[in-house]
Image 1 (tube, rainbow, N blue to C red):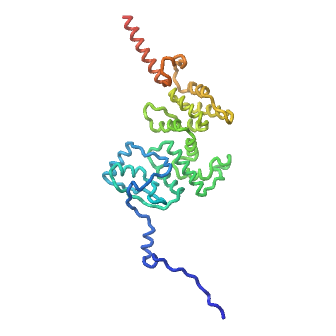
Image 2 (image 1 turned 90 degrees about the vertical axis):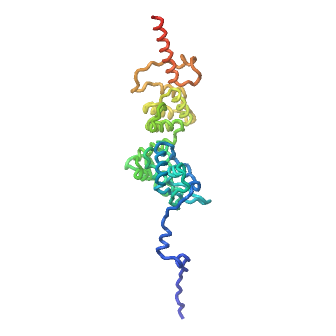
Length: 323
């Protein structure tokens, strides 16, 4: 006698028994919830600054009048609470405006998914510092590689392998900068903080602060850390940053050193003191001839100002004697 065939089946869940299909679909949709800003922690190694500038003041005024119109995006943490993914400036504005709750969308995200969303959302800001782009692009590129992007392809038919991996191309497609510019920004992550600050100054344009363009900074990123620190100190003393040509020369000299060697401070100084093509004619006085008249560490510009004032005083006295 043939055995009857057995069919396996699973019992319906309680949700299936006591809710409708429409209710189950509604439950899966993301909703806006109100959270206390204190429940939301910072994104780890968040590369974008939350600056108290005019834009923030305007955002605070808007939040006071209209509330937070665009919800922040957060993800739940394992131990409880939430982690901010997109909305750091909105949370700051809400706290400054005295709001006790912030509208948020809670979404389950992996760390790498959160990184990509965090970077993409912040790249839409009006003003982004080079240092912010540098670390943001690096974080996103690393996340894309971990998510399974191929890195054995080049962006052009001819060229060294791994010069521009495929993930760089995809990163460029979704970013306001091209792949070459993105690679330049990522190189900035190899700069010591004092030199990286000079590149930011070129965007902030604060009076009296030395500035450095992106291209020279990229070349200087190949110097050893000790050489970069020596360079940063000399820039402060001379109050002059290297040109692109000088940066190329510094990189070349550094690469010619032994693996355990180091570019001499005097060699760096000699290159910095070279006259730049766009410089006007200047009168140069060797530092050792005038250093005895100034406290140790006096910046070159301060020395110049003091000398000019002394000459002006000398000239007035000469005129008084002639009368």
